[in-house]
Length: 492
Length: 126
Image 1 (cartoon, rainbow over the protein chains, first blue to last red):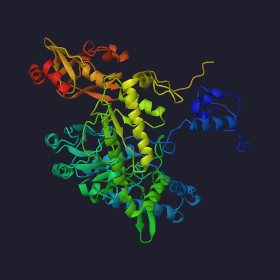
Image 2: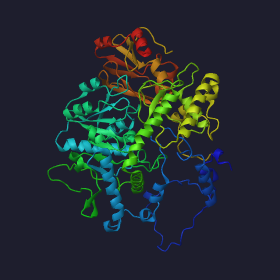
Image 3: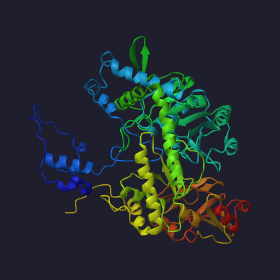
């Protein structure tokens, strides 16, 4: 079986009554569920033998594409290599066999890892404390905004309901603010792609809870006015929230805490090299300055002499009103084995080498940008940080779009960049190579991008029909959005 | 090249206003539908909803992005274009023929702040 052409559903192998399990004899007697709790129809689960199941998923895994398969320049996602040593450490039985309900004295090593990671992330970002509990970036954003909201409310400052978000922001920023019950206000970018301070000023007032910024922003540009922005926001009583999606170029060089940010979230599955994609597991720790420490969610690991203990969630029913502590936002202490991988990554790089991450990521991005600028439109011509944005092909006369280029890249064995984001440019193509790619793989990508630009001029239909070398060809996005079929139904 | 129609008023966020007496039809421009790509969903307000100028009154979702609809003028919704519920792609076919909402204008003087077709054409060319 050629796994590259594999495209079956497990349901297609199903035969009624065929099974790959045998349950032990029931020693407990028969206990019926009440009628009201029973399902009315069969669940219609697939029924297969074990070998069929194993082959099915093994063949499917061959269709997958990850960093271990090839270059993956997905902008703002920092798809860097996940070192094997981190996996080996996470697989150690002393870690992987732990149970989250074990007594503290039996998991001192694991708690030490969590505590040390809290400390390391605080040092790297210039914050005073961290929670490792959020499971992903957007979960971290929500946690961070809840901390901000609790802070304002605890001071009786209940008017602060607005969150300022730049027009270049990650879509999760306004979404998280809305989920947190806050109102989103957009601040525009200048022609150079940075936050427009003159547009920001009139938005400020006593109803501003916070501004959410990514620095460098989604165009890969450093927000150089950040000291002034921080001053303006703090002067009106608001807080600064740092979206850590783009921390990679600053790692070990400059710190959000020193720029004036009060809250940061990090994506360990981006910057700190834990596995990424396919829906997780991720980890989105949140760091705060001293004045917000009391609002961090629990449980939280603290050090007491030579022992590590876990602060439990607050279960007070304060007589004088609402308790503003954030309590739980997850079960237990987050995705522990992901946090462990990140800790291993930080230790394996060390203080000296971690400073090389940013410059190398920046060099790689600028090298690609400068190598392709004759073929692709560069809307903002500045030195970028870890990523940059093209606005489609330079020559748009043949009607070839960013989507066509992205699909054609798949034919050449590369993952596509992030496309049609940020929304500032209609044909946006956001490229982030990361520091872990060799010059050879980057040169191959540049060569293929040039070939595609040539194809767009000479044989545009080839791009309109792409991809042709993948298990599934061009997907009909419109039909998929309008008539999604989410449940398998057997036609027979 | 995106189509622009004379006699309409245009906003910087690419909505148009077609005035008829004290009422107006509001939709997105041809330039906007080009930039959005294939539209798959239009989120529209309810009849009798009222909104202020620059307030969001809905959203257009395409395969590329979801984009807010900003009110180019203040008004009260008299009618929504129900055809867009089943066929959002009508916006791609002809954005000017397929308005999104019909409103009763609150303040006609607000129209003066919008662009005419010439100014909008120049704005898009920037």
